[in-house]
Image (cartoon, protein in one colour):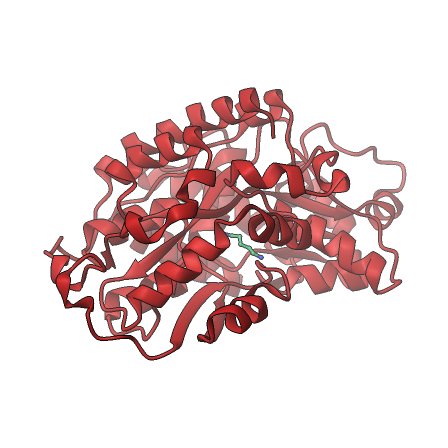
Length: 388
Ligand code: N2P
């Protein structure tokens, strides 16, 4: 991503902040400085253990092994598939995890809830490799870049198996707006036989449906959610399943032909399909009305037992070669400017990963629903999924 691309992305991300300020959180902010890695009580050496909770399929296969070999720290690396799952664990406290990777919008709520501890920058010499523009925009969510380091970023969109979709549509041409493939019954009814999947979270599904309806995706207006629900119910009979992390394998094996999900996972499905000789022609589409931007961020939990090891890992990930290896493996973008030189040309030339300025300008920035809206969304989502 060139510098001007980044500037435009950051312009969008800036808009997030306004939504953040209005966001509510169930937990009250608390003084967590006693748990801070910069607190003097760090004299006792930590046991050589680190517990990480990250999204599935989001790291190169040797990233953890190389860290363990180099440091002697044993890493327990667990995965999740939705911000909702991570958030529920965090607010219940005592997660047992040292590092977690929430979306930036959810992370803002979690910072306000006192669920994270401050980063100790003196333990992060590779901080210098991060892109200044990203840091600046992240600082609008996290003043002074106090708690968060971006892991990777991408956008929610529609992914397809090109050949299967063309065959299923027959004489019907591909729609001008890719979102039609998952929200317009004219298309979904034809695509049903080859398999449509949706992400399995209320927020992801309602945000996309609201966007398709031309509404702000963080509206708190009940009528808007009702309209989104009505839209979703029209395509419900055509949806084969709701899965998030599982979309990669379903697309890669040809089990499904259309998915509403994460652009990086669609490019990863294509890669995996080629590796497995399944040769499915999978593409992440860039809707003309824009995809939904997200940034996933590393944070150290307030009650982390191994904050020093957590800093070691975060600093290790900020090495250009390590950050680039992760991007080369999973096709999501790194905020590490120095990593660009190590990113494969195939990734750099893929327009659905390294977006054009025009496509970046169209990305819809993340925000947060208030607690009442979240409850309403969850209620409607449950009805939508059960189809009644
Ligand atoms: C990793 C997907 C993470 C994207 N496979 C959603 N935050």
